[in-house]
Amino acid sequence: MADSAWAAGRASAFPADSEAPRHALFVRATHWIAALCFLALLLTGFEIVVSHPRFYWGETGNVLTPPLFKIPIASSRATVPTGYGYVLPDQNGWSRALHFQSAWILVLAGLVYLVFGSAGHFRKNLLPGKADASLRALGTIIGNHLRFRRLDEEQASSYNALQKLTYLSVIFFLTPLVIWTGLAMSPGFVAAVPATVRLLGGQQSARTIHFFVSLALLLFLVVHVVMVWRAGFTKRMRAMITGSAAHREAR
Amino acid sequence: MKSISRRKLIATGLGAAAGASALGVAAGLGSKYGLVPPDHDGLYGIGETLSYGAHRLLASNSLAREFPRSEISKTPFPNEVAPPSETFKRLQAGGFADWRLDIDGLVDRPGSFSLAQLKNYPSRSQITHLACEEGWSYIAEWIGVPLSRILDAVGLHPQARYVVYFSIQRDGWDSLDLTEARHPQTLLAHGMNGGELPVGFGGPLRMRVPRQLGYKSVKFINRLTLTDDLKKFGKGLGSASPEGGYAWYAGI
Image (cartoon, rainbow over all chains, first blue to last red; front, top):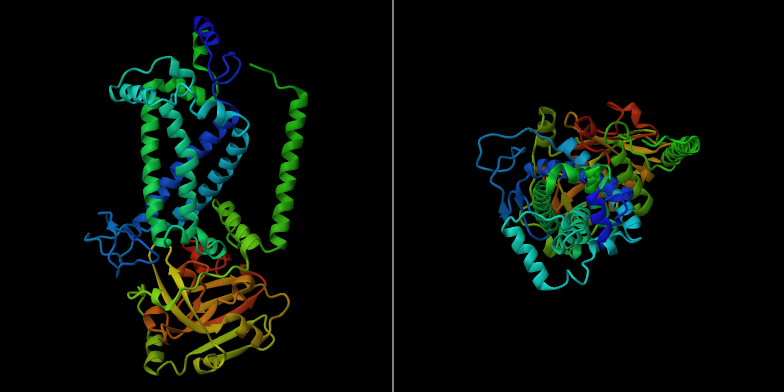
C-alpha cells in the first residue's frame, strides 16, 4: 500500500488511481500487434534481401550495374555474383506474402493507434513537457544511461525525455518513412502516385532507404528490449500485457 | 475476478454476428466487383486480397511512369533462367517465321497470329521500368501491339473475365484480369530498344505488364485463352506463380 500512496501523492502524467491501467488498452493491443508484425517484417525483409543482397542508388540497378554497396552474404539466386560457391534456398514466395500481409496489419493497427492516441495519449505521454525541454535535463538522462545507473522509480510511471523523443521519432518519422519507401517500390502504387518515388530519387533509392530505415528500427528494437530488461522485465511486461501498474505488486 | 454481465455477453455476441455478416457482405461485394484475387484462400489470402482490392478500387486506370530515352539502361539484365527447349531452337533457326500466337476460349473468332500479322497492327512504344521481385531493375523501350487491340480483333464473349497466357516454356503461364489486359500499356511486345526483342529478354514475343513486377511479363508467349473462371487452369490459383508460393497479383 505504501507504493500506492506514493503513486497517488505525486503528479504523474499517468493516472495514479490503482484501478487505472499503466497503459491504455488500445496502446497495449496495438503495441503487441505492431511488435508481431515488425518481427515478421524484419525476418521476411531479410529473406527478400538475400535474393539480391546488392544496393543501388537512383532508378535502376542490377547485377550488370556497379552497386552502391553489397552485403557480404550468399544469395538465394544463382544469377547474383556473391563470391560464395553455393546458393541459398529460395524463401521469397512466403516471405513476400507475409511481408505485405504484416505491413497491411501494421498500417491498420497504426491507424487505430493514431485515432485513439490523438485523444490525449500523444500529448500527455509522449510530448516532452516543460521540464524535459532543457538540454541539461536531456544530458542528465543520457549521462545516466551511459553510466548504466539503475533506473529509479520515477521512471516506472512516466517516460523520460529521451524515451519520449525516441518513441516520437519511431512513431512519427521512422515508421511513416519505412511505409513510404516500401510503397515507392510497388509498381502498381507508383503508377498511381508517381511522386512517392520521384521525391526519393528513384525506385532503387527507395529500396536502399527502406533497408537503412529497417536497420534503424532494428536498432530501436534491440535498445528497447534491453531497456525493458534493465527496468524490470516482469513488471514492464505485465504493464504492457495486462495494463496493471507496477505498484499493484505491493498488495 | 469480475463476472461477465449478461448484457455484455449479449452485446459481444451481437457485435460478433454483425462483424461476421459484414465480412460476408464485403466478400460477396468484393467478388462481384472483381476485388478478390484467385489466390485469396490460405494463410496470406487477406494480404493478397487487401492489396489487389485496394489497387483495383483506387487505381485501375493509372499509367505506369514512362521515361525519356536518356533513362534507358545501358545494361539491362536478361535473367535467362531456363534454357530454351528443342522446339524453341528449331523455331529460332527459322527466324521465328513459324512462331504462332494461338487465341481461343471465350472469343468470337478464335485464331492464330504470326509475328508478321501481329506487327501489322499499330504498335505502341513505351519506355518503362521493369522491376524483378528480387529487387533489381532496368529501364527499356518496349515495342508491341497493345493486348486490347488483339482482344478487340478476336471479339470477347461478355462472360470473359480473364486472359490466360502461356509460354512455350513448360510451367510458364499466367493470367490478367480484363482491367490489366485492357490497360493501354499492357503489350504483346515484339521489340525492345528500337530493335527486335532479343531471345534473352523473351523474344520473339513477350507479355509486358509495366504496372506489375517482372514475373508477370512472361517470355516466349504462344497462346492466349479467354476464360470466365481461373479455377479451370492448373491448381486454380490463376497462374504458375502462386503454385510456387508467389502472388498472382504482382502490382503489390
